[in-house]
Image (tube, rainbow, N blue to C red):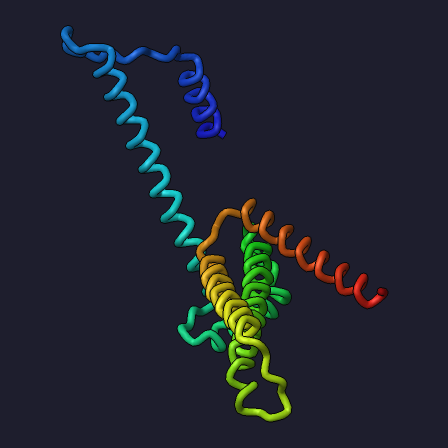
Length: 209
């Protein structure tokens, strides 16, 4: 009880003391621009230190969370994919004591977005191979009609374009793992769901017609 009262009295004494201004002696010939520059540099340095500490804390928290859910990074894409599926299942049954912050929802968002980019990458790559392989197949297989040269060039152009898109989807899938902006992830998730909804609506209209 005595210690509690002493702490309250100390807090009251600190609160009752007025803030004292610090006396800083600056050279008389220092211009206002120089003073502003010093203040600006101090503010920038303080912000850099704050950002560095926040980044270190974020990395430590991320490492601890990945250890809890068993997340690993593999160079092999198939191992990485199956590890992400395993993590997804483990997160669904994660004990309550291990659930902290918003890591679970962030992992789910990243898994869904990365899976979408992976599917788009595979579809684009398969489409590219089929379009480019169609040109020599006309001269190898007898049951395929040989198309005019300009149509073959168009197929090759579309095949190369599909290959470029497959590489872009691959890069996007890799970048997702490095994203930490929750608002950006939600915006990207909303854009993907809208895109998928549009595709489903177009397919339904075409089938209905």
